[in-house]
Length: 130
Image (cartoon, rainbow, N blue to C red; front, top):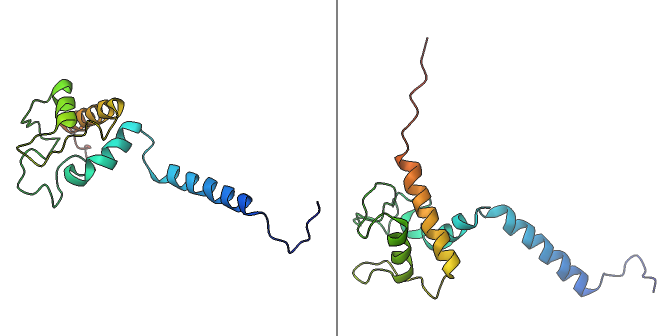
């Protein structure tokens, strides 16, 4: 079938093009690291994108900073993973078991450890001036 120049393409072709465009935009906008994506989606609102707990929600909550080395429930991977999965009924920390897959909980725990490790690394010395 030959279409005339002013004839519009079929609807499925337009929808397909739009879907591809949105996929490309979404891929370009989010973090490429899967662990960082889980953290940003579920944790950053309270703990901050950098993990320092400098959010309106975290004000007055001493354990919201994930980078200062202060841990209420332990700073090892198993303790962090357990807290993410089970939450803490005595705090605003909700349980994510059932809301995140076990793999996503592992990724979030690993990313929290990565944030904590990055902040505890010694700062490089300032450059020498002549």
